[in-house]
Length: 214
Image (tube, rainbow, N blue to C red):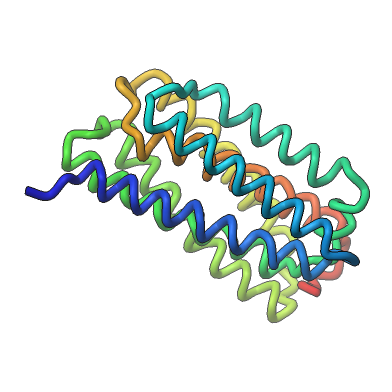
């Protein structure tokens, strides 16, 4: 008999590891020294380990996700060496990281398996897929220096932040108990992806009239 919960946890775990591995080279391209990406890798690995432990035991609260996202965004954009690294990173790379949200489609399977309520799993799973598909299109636009990339990215980031926060609110009201895979998503993927949306908006806003993805 197939254990859907274990499969979904493994899928989310794989997405977490993949995102963590992709963040490091993305920021490394804009960093002057190796210490920044190395420290980022250690931080993400430790954070993921804590997230796996918390999600496995059910020790999770939805308010943790936005708090972690705010802390990560403040760290990335508030600490000068990290901010300079993100400023030097490719916009196509920063935006393209949101393609990891395609994993949110697994929520539809979770609904079918009875692990998530339909009013949460289907709309927010679909929202993640839409954000991910738009991210791929925007990454292509930045790579081609499309003149509409900057404004489109600002709008996309705003909608992405609103959808993510809205999903957390609905999750807090409807998802009881919290399945391990959903807890891990909220503990790791949600904060990292939310902070990356803020970074993308910051870069798009500070890019001025030029859409260059360099």
